[in-house]
Image (cartoon, rainbow over the protein chains, first blue to last red):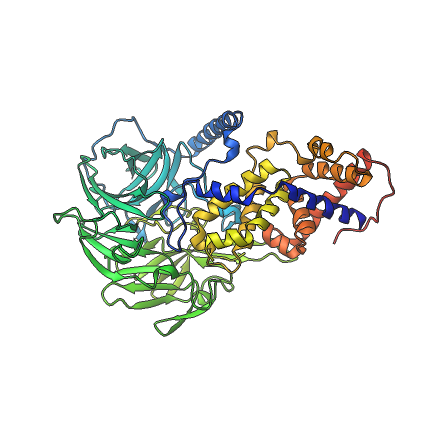
Length: 468
Length: 171
């Protein structure tokens, strides 16, 4: 007992090393992060603050050397397994042909693109808590094309920068890679042989503004790029939209109409006509146009980003959801309930529109009527053994054209017991016609940023579906 | 709860936790800054949780356990005794013993150190620790047992010979 008391006393003496709260708060504010109102996050705002130790002279060279060794070793290992595509020369090329549409597999796109994710998978189907630790900025990223039917990597491509955002047309994938604050854009096609990737640097002028998302038109001829003009430490920014031709790089730009019209532009998806861009506008302040699903006709004249139509007002719903995914026909938004009147813990009860549901439920909003359809209530998810207590799902990875079918990435927290180690199990499930089908072969591959044809799956980012 | 409210009410406790976990001020500052900046940027989600403070502590724990990039040159906190000794040079054996204990604590593997901090500083039960670390209670007990054994052995060798305390397993 004396040893334990000594230990307690010794540990308490370490409190003398407690950092100064005021200085810490100042450092956090100075990190350039925005003030955090209860709004959806933006990827470009996640730029990591430089840790203090990195300013020590000897750490950076060591880390750089280690990184080089790691990259070389991983490159050699991967090269033995796959036939990777390369970003090619630094000179951009014209994309002169339209990629033929990907085949389908049981109604799903046969292939999708993944980037290195945050999720630390230990064994297929499981992940650890440190899944929440964001990846650090890398000088190169390797993306993979996955076969939906098998979960196997059929091709990889190495891109010269940190991949912020990915997108997919009907037959090709696209990626935005940032290096030294300059973002360039790439098209990634699956080789005709079905293995290996062909990577083309697109002739789109590089972007130096903070990048939001990208979205590819169904035929891959246009890339929509959202960028932001940060306003000091404010959480929201003026938004710019660039629509660039992938063949020539010719651009057209839209901007928010007024300085005080700050906000966020999430979940861009092109509609099937190849002209209309749907996006979730999140108002930054009272002066901004209201949060809504908006449609912008990019073929119409004008430069006003908000000049299109607001087809679904999302006011009063915004803070309750973990983002949305827009159906390719632009008529539905599907989101996961994050908080209800009963609280924010998974399974907490509440009502929406007089319907009882729980945190974690999947809701679909109709742009035509504004009404909500409960697609499934979290604890009743069939096909997954046990209740999804302390668990949850992210906004859909993929939606069919009218949102009648959706692919979800869900997590189930199994607390540790006396005999079993606690784990968070990942489940990829297909929800169709009221039925849930598990696709267990995808659990080890689907992760942070996943681009399914037809969808910019911006919302598939690990959030906080479980409570500690 | 806004981040400002969290900072006002909970930040000191969280920073103390970082200090005890890290063992020295510089590492504690790095650890706290790394985690709190990340928490700040995601506060909209964290604020919705029932116990944001606990979540931040878990983030801190994860960060501490995954921090390898500077471990090669890291000086265990307890090795740097000169500063403390110079400020209180005339304390009796107990003080010296504590310094030695801190020195040995700094040499423990991170997982073992984290278990001791959670058990003896935070006074958490093994089940809670297991949940926080993502392992089983048995593993927690194993870590604690090994850590305590290592401390006892090192203390016996380096300090003064004294009779072995009861050999019972820690709780």
